Length: 352
Image 1 (cartoon, one colour):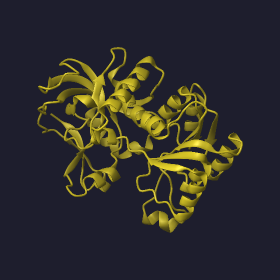
Image 2 (spheres, one colour):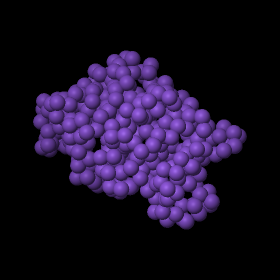
Image 3 (tube, one colour):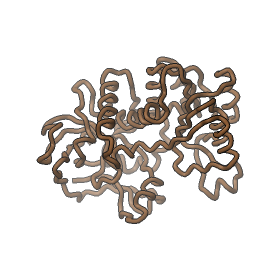
């Protein structure tokens, strides 16, 4: 069978289509899934480098959010049966890629896919739903009446965050980095309270947020990564190169209100003493968003299954919608991956 991997060293971004993978054999509580669709996402190279610092691999899997059909079971599996359609997330420490023909996962990492939900929509939505649910519910504890600032709301993750937050009664403010993103966000239903255009001027964020909130700031900020340096020399030193505008950490902190929560995807975030002082004076907190922790640690099986079930129910009913930008074959995916980060609106899905 075949599947896509990224080779070490990860910073070279070299992807291959391996056509000599052995078909997996399930352990006691594992299942083998014939993959029908997989959402294409850039590998988190920083996280992989940290996770495998002591025991690096020659290659790492590509693709985690999958939907397919169960074709084999371990002897202890009781939740699914052969022939069931399932959707789930492959752990980052797996040896079998989601961008492949077959994968082997724990029965607790998947849920049954409803008939009315297509394989493509299920794969495209499950990963962002889990990430958004983790940020909003388990970390930010968002409830009705809260004000949430979603950075880059037009991205697949940001789009899901907006939908969930508004359904839970929160007021949502978001940012756009291009005219296309602005147009996409204007069509979101129910509409957000304000769309802040940071394409040309990122320094308007704080003043816009304070005007919208009457000067009190927001309860929650969910970012898409932040900029930590202002000097060009420092940016080059840490390779802070991005095609789209990225907000500075000071801007994010300045938007927080009393007891505000900052949910960040910036794994190497550095807080200087003045940053910590500003957070302290607000009684604010910082949470690091790494949704893969659900599949790396099995201490919270019940909660994780609840998230998966709730996400799939919302996707089936259409209360959470995902936009699929394009569908590609396994062979086409290898060539698309290096430029995938330039696709901001909608998900790319691989069909087997």
